[in-house]
Image (cartoon, rainbow over all chains, first blue to last red; front, top):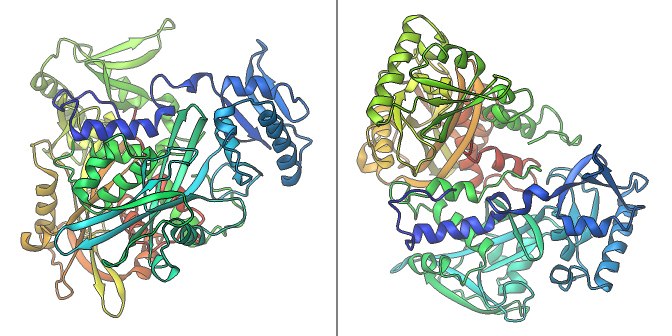
Length: 316
Length: 316
């Protein structure tokens, strides 16, 4: 994803789009804290990535977190204490530590968003979860977050391919007021099927009834890993494409969204690079536009860079 | 892409499909020669990967290949001699060495397929090529090969989504007699546009006229890196989807194909894991099936592993 080609103008759409793609992959780019991060390990398997300031706090809980050091007494990895053998014990002990962090006002940017909603902790999607963790804390542990994003589109007889985009409510804890996919949400640790999560988000966020939403087509995933003030976020989003009837209009539902807009693909492309779009949702939308053949590899110099930037391999 | 989940039967479709995906990514899996490979560098930029037995032969041409060694006199990387400053000089000198290899019957598995057809050598698709190299030799240097694959499909009123597959001719140097996409080919170093390459392959291999083939839609890329008896093959394939008219039948053209078959998606899925399918073309087809929503993430445990295995990040 380097941007070395001197023939591409720095303010071109391609360069600006590449910057959004790079934002989503900041953990893997030069200047990231990757080199000073350590593995978070449960039962011999890496499930997350820890920043030094998080490690310092975890050291205060030696009955929960075991620091594995090298011969120079430097921490090499952090293992969940081996006496915590069950899913329930791990979940209880770790979340108790996290509640103490929150009550001590540690890591406020991440933990002010405490949601009372747990995410699974696991090495990969097909593996059995090893514990669950408060969603707001997952970026402190760099565990993989899974979600669902829905591309809502229409084929307009005059305008061609068009998309419905949402404007996030100003009261959202993350990315308030920014453009987003028509509906999206995280996969909770409650055994909810991906399709049911998709149906729920469509109904709750955009008032899309199940009779319409059930026609959405799963079209793959996107994956990436970014670092920001909340911590490290390796994320996998299951992507659905939903062709909405021409006469249908999404409606504000649970208050997560303030507005919906109907844009042509040209307008969507401009919004993607405007700085006004939630970056990972921009990546979902870019993936849709590429899959639909609306970007051509002969005319887009970063075509392959875009593909690579939306498909990180989720190995630790 | 690990296969650890004990709940998935080892002879299930999922496990067998995962094995094909892993075959395409063998360079990145345990047991690969990755640890003993060295970088091939031109003008300070890595453009390939060299196996030890290739490095041994390159040492005999010190005016072309410069061995960079560490303090223990071990080779750390191989740089093209800095006095070879132009594209033309590099191309000429390296291909002269390769002709000597061929004439000495070195690396016969790779070089018996000498094609008198050059590929570009470059760090990534958007960069200027630094030289070009005989196609049959690229796997000896582990340079990235770019190609085009076309998914030919129909929506049959009775059978639903169906695909046209090709049976490769028994006289093909690689993967003779195996199933393949309806048309495919490498991108030659002759400034051919990707779309024109697609149109050519459709016409030459499957007698699909331009009037039909021009409706093909670019739908992204797949990327992977495998090691086999020819060497190391990091490959990026530009993927096109072509909906063929129901009454249209591909015809054997230039003799690369012996036969065409019309299969339902269920039949295609069975063929993908039969051992009878060229592996990278199976990956293109799997990518198509996923993008078309014909595999569901709730019922396919390796859904994310499949996604990752078809989108290698082409960094050295």
